[in-house]
Length: 220
Length: 261
Image 1 (cartoon, rainbow over the protein chains, first blue to last red):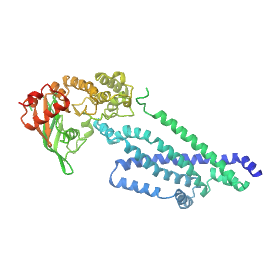
Image 2 (image 1 turned 90 degrees about the vertical axis):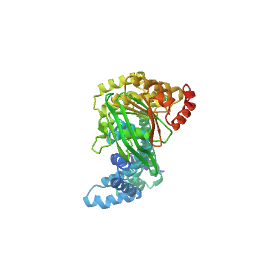
Image 3 (image 1 turned 180 degrees about the horizontal axis):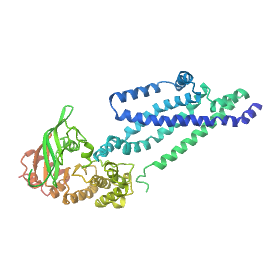
């Protein structure tokens, strides 16, 4: 019983890891999008060598477990350049997400009917203008559900950063678990916190999807 | 062509094949300013391909295309600038679904012609009014009927002040009740002197407003002349056959009895 009480007393400490978790997640998602969208555009619209190189990158990243990627960044790059472990983990998350987001956006872009591009070009738009003004705005809307999924994944994957010592939610929970001797309860608390964050994130993305949705026949 | 007016579209010896199938077999065509040319023919005979070769949405294998004196098929031609002078209306409308009707009509003016937003929206409203849809300016394509969508598409093409309007089966995807409103707009444009090249099955439209009726088959132009002549005194039996079939199917029966002469 004392163990339980000790855990509950440590909740603020567990909670203090959330900020780092959120930072890792934000970095992973943001960089993943910044790199992922251009990669998707290259795969869809560029030819030959460029598309091949991008595809190679994507397939390689997708074939590696995130833990391996984290260790590669940590032992390979971070230690050599003396970078903090947070950076190694953030980079690993970002690179992984960029590969998955590239595929996500590629699917969304290719789902846009070909007639849209034809109409845009028939007005005299360049390929770039057509992609920027017509295709991407529509593709973004289509991709929100999948992106919501990816956001949840990156959030949960941030927990792997604890393996290289990043002081995020999992690490803090581990400390508490070790100190109190109550691993189950400790990780239940962590689980509840992850759940709450994921739930809130999905709800906001759902709201964003509703705001961006094109009104249809049924509405005015 | 001399005397009657400027040659807006000229096509020389156009060839296009898709794999084994040769869809355009050395086609020649000339369209003068203000002419309304209707092209009919069986499916797959290259009518849509012909239209798309004019603004190079389809690249022909060989042959030359000129629009308003500019060789579209030349390597160094800025195709985007040429396309801004050619209006195209598609069978599937192809309205930009994330933009309102007004934004659809204005976007070409803003992004391609670089017009400031205020003026572009004014021009867009003019064109929407011209096709009778000023009250739908703030509606999205998903909120419009097929006939309304096509009229917005026509307005979008007209807003660019094109030298020629290309219509690729503009009413084929519409419910019969909605065809009339689109044809009315097109007839008005014809009367206003817009140069039009229309691929369609609508014989009534052809007879009422077109200057020339072209029958295409097998990748070449089989007949080309005033609609009355082509319809009632075609030079080829194949033309007669096809036109009779169309009249049967579409119920435009006023002239079909005479076709058997």
